[in-house]
Image (tube, rainbow over all chains, first blue to last red; front, side):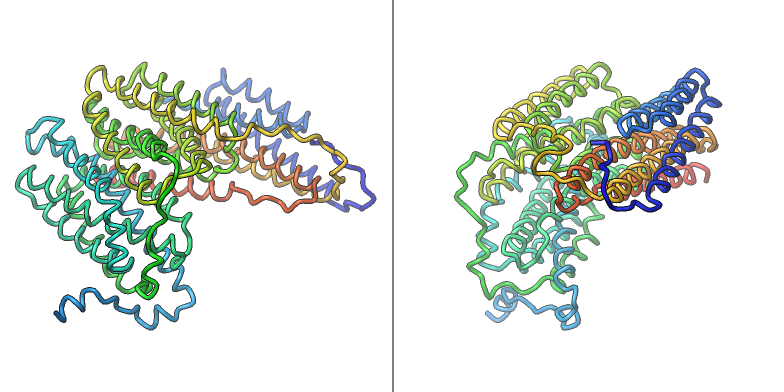
Length: 82
Length: 500
């Protein structure tokens, strides 16, 4: 359900807007991971690795898994650090 | 008997209200507020029991009668009250119910002894039953629209009750838990008089539907499973020395989970999901049983328990229900049973027996629901004969919406991290920063998951040329931000009070 159909209609600038939305999301993910590295390096470095996954794969399922994973990592860091 | 006649005559609403374009909405809101106050009272009073026990120096069993007597009376008079509705009409029943609640609340708040308190809690229950029966009649006859809103009001009342109870006990003492019913009751009576429509003209139609074929057992079990944690948690918190305001927030965690489950409602009505929810409930209860003392981990587990229990309770809606008055009576009886069970089993082993009883109720509830629900549908393939490829621009817009929700989720997680790391500790409230940070981070995870579910759902609708389903994410976000704002206000107030 992730593929886009090839249709006769011209998508106009929709492709570019979506491309930019993916980039913004990847930047937001990387920024959060960077902050997490600062708080707890042992948890933050795997999160930074996940941001590479979000940037490169551009698959909705993988992005969702990565966001949930980084949420749980952040939660762990907050509870461990107090 | 002109006085009696006047008392039995429904006064019309003021003209400005009657002719207002939103008159129906005002009436529906009034009925919802009555439901909200009823549930709020139940949660707050359960919360005052440890304080009552200390004040009157009585046994835990004796003090539970304050709550038990109230709920048992509600269960017992639910059916007779429908006959009162037939005789007086919903508006008068509703309004007089609040008059009774107001008087009884005043006596309860000023009571010199536990016996008087229990007696007037029974009187208060009769007033509450009148309000409940009048509200149900108004909703069921369609005079007041918006029946689903009473469910939401009931759930919000369950969330607000413990929080309000904890704050009132921490700041003003247990008497004000009851005295707060006086202004609320006056407001209810005035609102009933001025905002509810006259309904005596079509009196026969007020009779609630009767003669259902199903046993009310499911309603009873569901209400037991929902209410028992709300009775158990204040006891565990009091035994562990947790301050009342914090205990109120902890106790409000499971009902907040119910609200979340209610917002996600229809998506959960498949057999597999009900079975997964029941298994999850049992697993979470097992996790809490390992160490029942309140803490950060158990608060998270309680929120999860609330969502899972809510999933089950909402799935129960798909099962045919008994008549309305029987359902109401069964529900109140379930709550009364929860009070008794927790009283009898709550102390030994830190509430482990009570938790086991909740797990048993969950299994008893889940089995008949799962049998009656359909199996989960198979996933649809991208394009079948019945599906046509949609315009690519719509799919791209759907993808961008998904990404926007993901960025919202990331922003919430970042906010949670910032609260935990950058804010200075709140004086006198050591749990303040985690209480704000943890919900923000969990909300981020929840939004990411729901965002993906909605992406798939919308894509399916686009391929089938169906109307796009409505998104629940704005509601989830609004509700969660509201709860977090409430927690923030509580933390700030407690911190300021400590500083003075």
